[in-house]
Amino acid sequence: MRVDIVILAAGQGSRMKSSLPKVLHGIAGKPMVQHVIERAEECVAHFGSGRIHVVVGHGGDQVKQRLCALDLSWVEQSEQKGTGHAVAQALPEIAGADRVLVLYGDVPLTSSSSLIELVSSLDQAPLALLTVALDNPAGYGRIIRNQQGGVTAIVEHKDASPEQLLVNEVNTGILATTAANLQRWLPALRADNAQGEYYLTDTVAMAVAEGEQVVACNAPVEQEVQGVNNRQQLADLERWYQRRQAERLMAEGATLMDPARMDVRGHLSVGQDVVIDVNCVFEGEVTLEDGVIIGPNCVINGSRIGRGSHIKANSVLEQALVGECCEVGPFARLRPGTQLAAKAKIGNFVETKKAIVGKGSKINHLSYVGDAELGEAVNVGAGTITCNYDGVNKFKTQIKSGAFIGSNTSLVAPVTVGEGATTGAGSTITKSVEDGELAVARGRQRNLSGWQRPVKQESKTTGE
Image 1 (cartoon, rainbow, N blue to C red):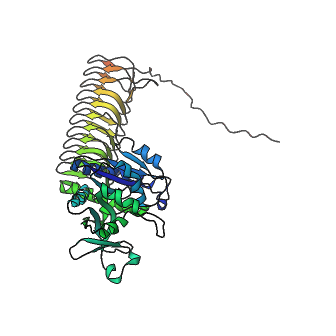
Image 2 (image 1 turned 45 degrees about the horizontal axis):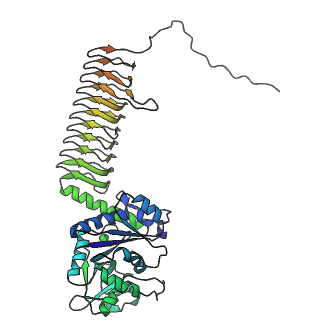
Image 3 (image 1 turned 45 degrees about the vertical axis):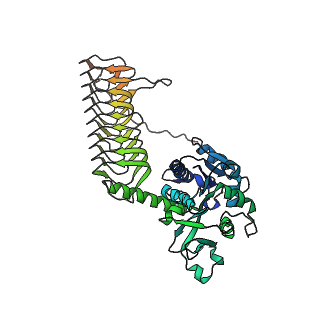
C-alpha cells in the first residue's frame, strides 16, 4: 500500500511576532515541522511505501533551505486560501497514492502510533478523523456521532446547540482518506464563508451526504494534537515534551535531581544508576553508561560517556568519547574528536580538540590540548598549550606514555615528547624530546642587585 502524506506548512503565523516562518520555530532543538516529518516517515515505513509532500507559502524558501537534506516533495501555495485549497495544490503529486494522510506543520507532537491507527481505520471507512477529548472544548468544532458511533457532522462552537455544546470530543483537523476521494471532493469545495476560504473539514459533510461512513480515532492526550499559534503555546509544548523525556529516563534507571530542569534535544540513552543534576542539556545522540554522574549546568552533544565516569559542573562536551571511570571538569570543554581512555582526567578550565588521551593520563588545569595524542599515565601541567596551528595548517603533538609536561609549557607542533621524558616548567618545546630526556627551553634568569623601581612622576600643569 502506498500512503502519501501531505504536511501543511504555508501559514505565516503572525501571532508568533517573528520573521521566522512559524513551522521553523523549535521544539526540543529542532523545527516543529521536522518533528511532523519524522513521524510521517515512520508512518510511511510502516505501510511500506509513500511520499511526503510539504505545502509551503509564507517563508517557503527558508523552510526549504532548513530542510534541504530531507527527501521531500515540495508544493507551493502562493495564496493562502484555506486547508482545502492547500491540499488541492498537492493533488497532482498524490495521484498514484492509495491513501492520503493530512498533517499540519505547527502540530508537532502527534505520535506515529496515532497516525498509523488513523490510516489503518480506512479499512473500515473511506474517511477517518483524528479527534481528542478536552476538559474545556470551548471554541472547537464538536464531533457529532450517530448511535452506531459513526461521525455524522462537525459542528462549530458558534453553531452548536446547547446539547451539542456538552460534547467534549473535538476535531483536530488531521484526517486520512483515499486519493480518489480527494480528487472528487476537493474541486467541489466552496468558499462561501466569512473567511472566504476552502476548508478541508467540509469533506466530512460531503462523505455523509454520499452515504459514506466516517470514523474517528481518539488521540490519547491533547498535547499530541495541540497546535502552536504563539510563543506561550510553544513553551507549553516544550515543557510537556521534556517532562515525557524525564519520565522515560527515570523509568530506565536514571536519577534526575529535578525532572523539570533538564532538556533533551535529540535522543538520550541511559544505563542503570545514572545521576543527572539540574540544568543539563543533551543534544543529538548521547549515551550515558551505567553509573555515570553528570553535574549541574553541563551541555553534552553527540557524545558517549563510559561506565562510572563523572562529568563535573559547567562542562561542555561536543562529539566526544569518554571511557570508563574518567573525570571531566568542572568548567572543562571537550571539543569534537576528543577520546579519553579509562581513568583519564580532564580538569578545570581545560579545552581539548581532536585529542586522544591515554589510560590514566591527566590534564588537570588551565590547558589547551588540540591535535594531540597522549599515551598512558601522562601528566600535563597547568597552563600547557599545544601550538597546533601556524595560521594556515594544523600539526600534531605526540606525548608518549609516562611523560611529564611541566607547567606553562608550549609544545610547538609537529613535535614528539618521548616515553618517560620531562619538559621543564615555562619551556617552549620546538623539537622532539627523546625517551627519558629532560627538555628545558627558557631564557636564563638574571637577578640584578641595587635595582631601583620606577617612581611615578608628578604631572606638570601649564600656566596661562
